[in-house]
Image (tube, rainbow, N blue to C red; front, side, top):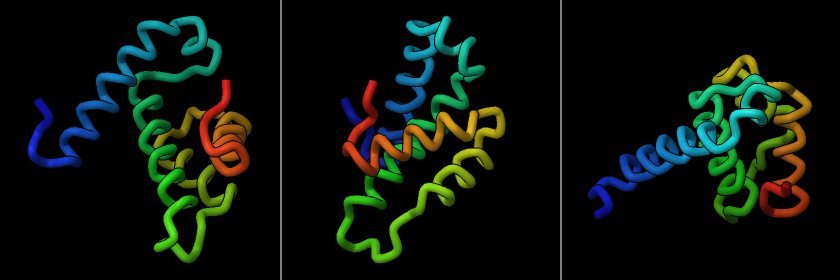
Amino acid sequence: HAPEERGEYLETLITKFSHRFCACNPDLMRELGLSPDAVYVLCYSLILLSIDLTSPHVKNKMSKREFIRNTRRAAQNISEDFVGHLYDNIYLIGHVAA
């Protein structure tokens, strides 16, 4: 059963996903130097970016430089190249490619 507040539901969903992703991908987590908190930040950032780039109501779309800066402020140990790659996937392809 989903909570009445959508924000609470999204937070719960991303938190559980982050912990499960880390548990299922320990080698990748070590390779990228990510923690469950960093995965949480990345997930939330990607959702916001997707909305930003696809919503007709957002007139000033987020640039790659802004996305990298904002994401790295929230999770400092994330590689700039990795975050840039995620932006490119959302911007050019529409989803995060493998």
